[in-house]
Image (cartoon, one colour):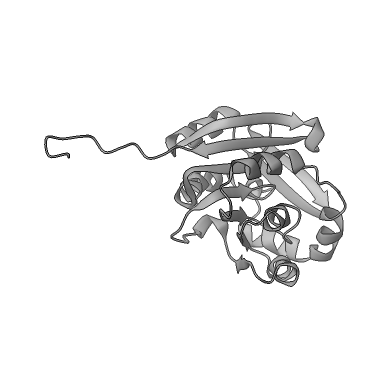
Length: 215
């Protein structure tokens, strides 16, 4: 499958919003539970969470909202965002392109679960600056990728989607370059639907060097 323009990916999700709701609500607890719990355990009370490619708000955003964390979600599909607003009207939901996100604030955790991997290789590389700009020092980044460099094609509700992945070594390099330390990298986790998961922490900023004028 040729690379899908991002607006085409969003249109495809637009057409499966109702199916997506029924499918993503099906698991109780969700397959992502262990990873969401690990992130929540590290968050200060009330810390805000940013969900990139939030879909309908379940199960990821809903998990953190029910745990007392305000969520900001962004998705390119107006139909998906409408579902979020119906379910969680007190949260902030944005129709937009994650590649161009510039909120001017940071979050205790940034999520890009089953969304980031729809981006082309170059767009994925560029996203690490967006991740870094929106993750607080000491905050967490959770995202999914493929197990290695390449493309995989899938179908949801009869609609084809392409998924892209860089090599694991390149993801590690990008994380390091943008100030993250890898906490976990699990390849094809059988307990999580075969997902490949990355969990990383944003390193605190280095202290300013002391000079003869320092107190």
